[in-house]
Length: 416
Image (cartoon, rainbow, N blue to C red):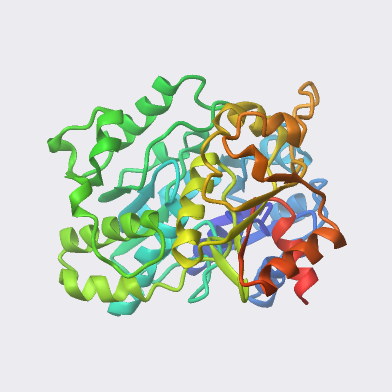
């Protein structure tokens, strides 16, 4: 096939373009700006253009007809390239439909990692385990890895490991050989207007999976039964030497998955998972006493603070909320999640793809119900805050930067 990717430099589309190419397809695409991803793809001979007015797409189609136009969920319906692709009669879809096609066409057994939280780390753990066992593996994970690219296709592989996201009902494109369910809460009310509709989507995903491994309390929420797969009890959390209770729980899912697939014994799996180096922006160590984490949902904040407290009794949190529209959805959940932080520096919300009709919630409004509100300092991302961070580090405190916006890149610039 000849495939065109709009937004080819993105964290989801870029690895998929690489996978599609390695699977034997012709690939080209566009993005608004250059990036490390677009540079890498160009070096491999993949044509990439930064003009998205439809001209490059037409030229590619005139040269060799495009079979499939793939775009991300962030692309608006009136985007020039999407409009052009439809006018030319090219098949269009979001990325998951193409990936599902590749997995089916190559007759790969899908190992899907799904759940409200913990997908990226658990997917990374599974990929790490396969690599350490020397088993050929194809995969796609929603973050950069220290031990390989974000996505890869190996023609010798029998399995495909995928971070299967429920956003936009993406995971319902797939029919996994094995599904690992990390957690089930309630998220994405823009897609699932009620908690019941969210749970029903997971119920459907279970029905589409040949085998499922999940925790009892999550199974109860989805109304899963023993026939749905392996239902794990709390007592089955493995004693794997990883920081963070949620990491040990996620590693247990991977261990049980390897056991189900009969790929190794439990003791070997424990040793491999204990050596997992992590994924970028998931409690990533930037420098001594300084960590960065992508988490921005209250349950993620609580879990990451618990992990930080295993390393230090004095944790300083610098928190940047993500998207004002999302803050309107989760503001009432900001209660107990910060209690393990000694001090909290609360930044203004990072704004991205906002609804102009919604008023911007201030940090003071968001923090009104936080139980340890006396620990909060409302701050700005500036030289004064950086000095405060440096002082805390010099005093031996662990500083945790949390947010999916600009906080990570700001800290990396200050460190350089």
